[in-house]
Length: 382
Image (cartoon, rainbow, N blue to C red):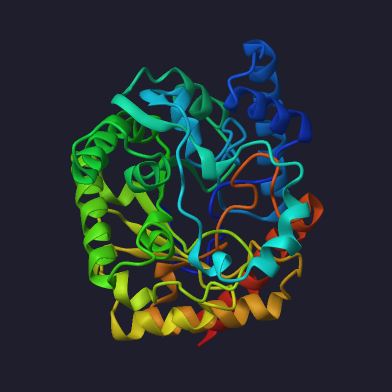
């Protein structure tokens, strides 16, 4: 995993705005409606080329394909794996359920929703990875991309198991491990293509106020331990320096009053066989948690990708704000060479429901670059 000796590199958490026509194609495919495969292929290729160019223009060092080839950050697996069908009954976020007036306020935002993440397919038979055709095609579209380094995202077994209901396996433990074995094919394919693998694991924080909302925090921590264990098994033989793990509390505007504190899960995250953690630290609920890295030092084997851009508000962070956040994180970690500048989450985690206007997304990423440059000048001058 590339780092720098004299400046803070910029990256982001994965998804970037999709053209509306592409989002509609993904939505139709997600619902099982007919989609012309060649039309979808051309749309994905064009959108990927455009989003790579836009990242370079914005000053992103470590970029990706913006997840243009996927309908969402986890339901895409239904097209690559066997065993899914029907509709899941996903638990709602506890903080949102406590504020129905807030839900009424945001409902209009979801009129253009193409993929319903709360009603994903369920596991109805043995899950297995079909073939690597789709992931190979995604990786091929970013081969030779003009980044310092290129990454590709993949779902964690935990988010698949939590959001795609188990109606087949005798226990959740068996379901998580079966999904991990299946996803191992995708993980290895990404690394074999020479890309950094980013595992998207919001389940390692989000499920505290969904699946485990009414259960003791100890049971939730046991869940985190289970998912990390399954991930480690799936990553056997993969150089940990080629893997980064993204953890967040749900990429939505809301109260977030039931989010698990980072300090409760950080020691377990450190047990993951990965070379970097990608953690939300810009939003109002978690901006203070950079201090956790003073109390629980980052392992020598890890880099921290600090979320310093909020992906749920159309406010564009001032570069000085970004720089301040990065400086605080660097001092907490103790070495700016082990810090990268990132975003809290993706900007278009599900086709058609991004909360940030596309033009604002690129303003935010330009602010990320400018803030990282300011912080670099100060950190390396001291």
